[in-house]
Amino acid sequence: MQDAENTVDETIDTVQQVEDANSAKSDEVIEETKTPLSPEQHAYEDLKVERIGKFKVGMAYEDARYYRNLIDKSAYVGPQQAYLLIVAKAELSQLCDGLKDQEKGQRYEVELSSACIESIGFFMNKYEGKGEESAMRLFSASMLLRPAMGLINDLDAQLEITKTQLPKK
Image 1 (cartoon, rainbow, N blue to C red):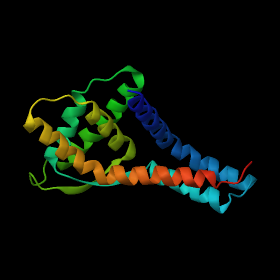
Image 2 (image 1 turned 60 degrees about the vertical axis):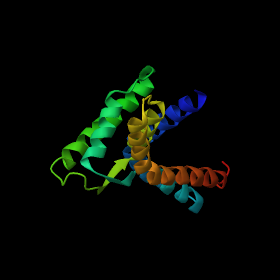
Image 3 (image 1 turned 30 degrees about the vertical axis):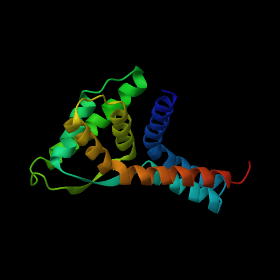
Image 4 (image 1 turned 120 degrees about the horizontal axis):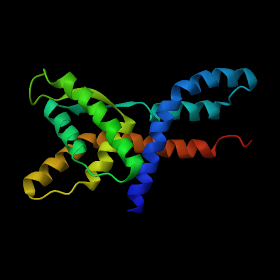
């Protein structure tokens, strides 16, 4: 349960970083006039921007609809998890609208925000199902997100390493 709470907190932090990204860019211009960033600081900031960005996922309309329905039926605890659900549902609904007229069963390369991907992963890990068919569908759906989750995890590791290399204040 502690891991789930940590994941929620990390995802909420990521969502907050996405929301702060635009204001951070204008703040960076002001900050650059004060003190220029070191190469390490630039690398760290670039990684943060990449981390809160969008990631490519191969997905058919049916996959997007499955994720949206799974999110819609997911249980949540507290306002943080409710927020994750709302953010993921909104993005998946938009994706479904974009894919609904495409060839059925054909997977297309789409982009999802890291917050959406992590939210889907969080709620998939909490999903309780019954039977082999349900298990196979959930597992297949999780495998579609695996490459993007791997990239997100790699960026998290790079951020941690880069953070240790930042000049001390």
